[in-house]
Structure formats: C-alpha cells, structure tokens
Length: 292
Ligand SMILES: [Zn+2]
Image (cartoon, rainbow, N blue to C red; front, side):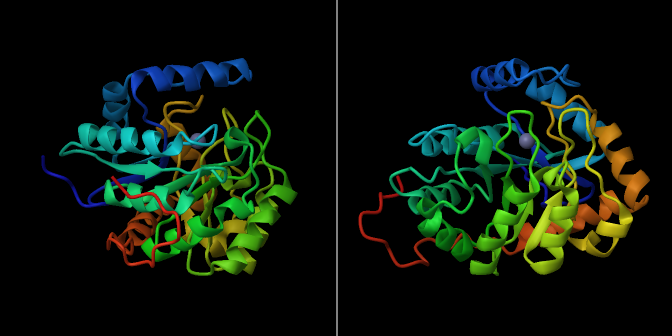
C-alpha cells in the first residue's frame, strides 16, 4: 500500500473519530443519549473518507479515547489496524492512541502505541472521568516527551462537550512541567476560547484545534487568535458532528482568512515531522509491561 506523506498535497483534519463499526455505533448512541445530533455523516468510514477527500483533505488524525482503565491498549491496537486499512492513495489516516491515568502503566501503553505506528495521543477528560493533571499520568508525560508526540486534549467534563475556563487553566500545570510537549486544546476549549488564547499566550507549547462542539463553531476571534495562527489546527469531529467538513472550513475562513486552513495543514505536518519512533530510547521503568 502506498502511503502519502503527512500533510502532503492537501488539508489536514486533526480531529476525526474513525472507529470499527460496533464501537462507532456505541459512541454515537452515547452522544445521542446526551442530546447531541443530528449528525452530518453516517457511520460508514468509506463514505466519510470519500467526503473528506472531496473537501480537499489529504490527511486525518483519527482519535480514540478510553472510558475506563484497562481498555486503552486494545483500543490502540484497533486504531492501528484501522489506520492501515483505511489509508489510501488519496488520504492518509494517522492513527491516534490513548491512555487512562488508572491504567497499570500508561507510559508502556504509549511506547506500545508508537511501536504500532500510532503518532498522536488523545486524552478525553469527560469520557475518562479524570483531570489532565492526574498524577497517574506522570510517567506517560515522560514517554510522550521522549517520542515527541502531539497530544489532543478534550479538557471539559460536561457531557455537552463544553469546557469551563478553569478546566482550560488546569492544563497550564502540565504545559509548565513539560515545555517540549505540544498540547492541543480540542475545540479551542469552547465556550472558554478566551481562557485558551490566554493559555497559548502564556505557554508556547499550547495549541488549539478549531473543532466545533456539536453545531456550535469555535469562536476564533482574530483579536484573540490572529497572533497565534501558527499554533492552530483544523478539526471537525467527523463523523460525530452536525457541521459538514465544508461548513467547518467556512467557519475558520470567515474568522481567520482564506489561507488559514492551509496554514493549519502546515502546522499539523510540522508537529508530526518531529515524532520519534526510536524504540527503547527511554530508560525502562520498574514493572513496565513488555510491548508485545
Ligand atoms: Zn472529538
């Protein structure tokens, strides 16, 4: 199979959720229970990828999240298989991995994910019911820094997908302790975009993605985000969003200008270019699982 270069010719959507059928159905049913939807896309990965290509997207980051301890590793294995299966000449699916602070060894889970070809980390505080500053993540942050993996983080704990300003601010503790890790605030912290912009001003390793929250686009007011444009990534939440990819692009272009989405593709490529897949570059921690 030929694999296009990350960010190659077209746009990059850094926030999509492509899952195997059963998991995709379970996730969507949960979202509908929370009152979200109707959704712009069916649960049909081939059809969704076709639509993304038609919108000019050539790379997607496909992001999983663990709802409980102990499931991240097998979920990551599934994501690795699916990324390989769905990558085509037209579109590269960059597989994401996840971890949970109550996993036996979140650092080993990350090492294992990298060995499987996964290159992005997703952490979802509401789904996993944890704080981003959870001490259970201490070793994991070291592993992430070692591999130079970008991390997309949904900081909010509300089932509506919304994030409070205090939840955004909490990421500052991680950003200060791990200045080399690129930390991407999902949904630009909607509706707490001002807190996200302030965090980005304070920490050069904090980024934001433009992913809408259900049918509400992120507020990317140029007065706040114009100066931070090289740290913004394009995202859509496809297929679990009420807005089409095109509509999300228009939302970004209207707020930050016509070239903004293309510039975001360059930023995404820059983040992936530094990922290190060196095995065992980090000293082993006691009791680490053997990456299988
Ligand atoms: Zn999402």
